[in-house]
Amino acid sequence: MGHVEVKIGVQNIPRELVVETASSAEEVEQGLHDALANGGVLALTDDKGGRVLVPVEHIGYLEIGANESRRVGFGAL
Image (cartoon, rainbow, N blue to C red; front, top):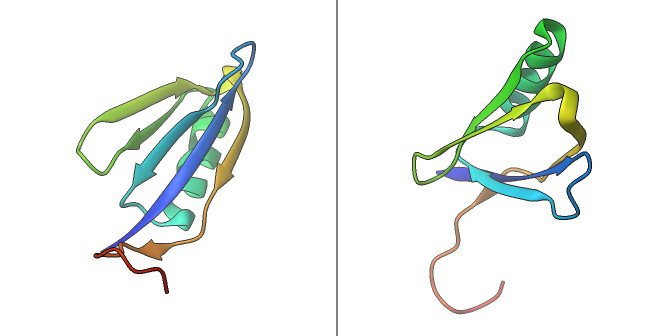
């Protein structure tokens, strides 16, 4: 199963939020578009089933990593 790393810059907060999710990059982007259209909340579910909710009016930026498969083992390919 693939995963995507999402970095969320929140206004007036020096550190970004980093969420690894099983959602595709397209699903994350669509969720952002929907939240912006409704003036609501961006909701993401992380790999462990936790939820991250960020009001869209406080989002400074959103960086969506490429879809990746999880690697198992110690070797780098």
